[in-house]
Image (cartoon, rainbow, N blue to C red; front, side):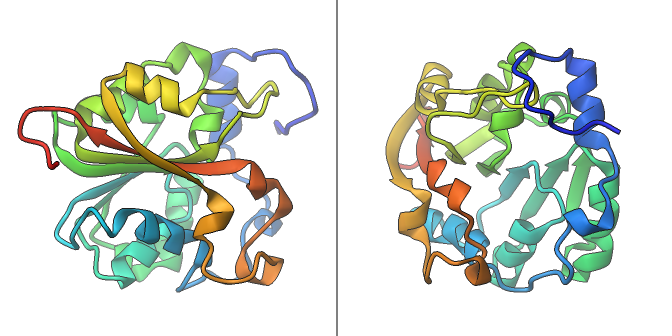
Amino acid sequence: MLWKAGRRDIVPLSELYKFLSQRKPDGQYYPTAPQWSWRSQTVIDMLSPFITKEYSILEIGCNLGRNLNHLWQAGYTQLHGVEISKHAVKRLRSLYPSLSEVTIDIGPAEACIQRLGDNSIDVVFTMATLEELHPESRFLFKEVARVARYYVLAIEPKEGHRSHFQYPWDIKREFTEAGLEFIDSKPWSALWSSELTQEHEWADDMHAFDAFLFKVNKEGSLT
């Protein structure tokens, strides 16, 4: 079984896929699935000034479905997910019956997204996902810009981590070079609606994350 070991070399893409797709021990998952999440609420707080509940939303790297379920419970029901781990999706289906009709594409994001049409999803977002995007898959930034109709939200490390399974991306630069218009960024901690404690889903290493919001700069997009 593959686990992070403090190495700094870049592994082959196939090895990264194997690591991300593995079935993790039960203790790696939360013991009870949260129905309301402070962490997921930050997505709504960042997007709600710009979108309505009728917007379609795609999460890249949806894992066990905490964010999608939170969005669903808040009234955002036009949802779509992408997740590389079939084991995570199996748990998602068990933990969150509300998502039974939500399409979850299983596979690497950079492969799944190519099956989606241009400007076919109103909002695309990621949370702690792009830091695990292999350098060979950098084109995913352009694919996200192609698929998004109005907005892209990326909650990712502002400077990036560096290990054999993590890669430092300049999120603002990558998406603006892909053609998106930068709107705003905020420290993730500034979006928290409660105390920054473990009880409220906060961890100290999350101080490294910012929320980056972009607008699709295409004819017919919202202003």
